[in-house]
Length: 169
Image 1 (cartoon, one colour):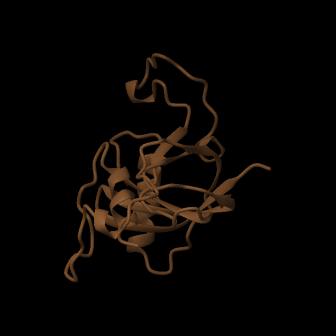
Image 2: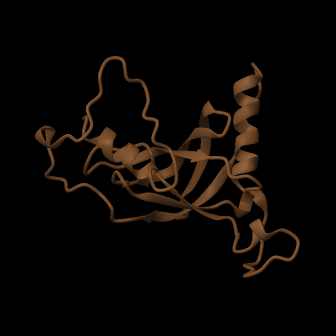
């Protein structure tokens, strides 16, 4: 059975950073630090792989298969039907530009109908995870009452959001 995922919520943090929450058709086991691989081709259209793209260099190698580090987490040894990814809009991005257009429409217009965006989950990847044996004595991030967000978004930092938050449970 093919797993699909549907966009259910968008939180726009800045004009170019947002968290996208997705709900899946089947349970997934996602450890903090792992990534989700999705095929956005059903939404953006199918495209053949090109090593070089004459018209627009940003389209080279873009076949709409996205690998996003999951910024939410599930408790160890549990499965979930929801996950979040926190992303930065990439200028001329074939996927991020349209996703951020949705984010802006939903956050600005009251009563704006949330679009139905359903894509295929190819799988979960990545083995940069915390050992299951870590407990409260091993926390490397401490949250105070005043803290409401983690501002470490950038290439390579997304996985640390879920890793840090998972130690707080």
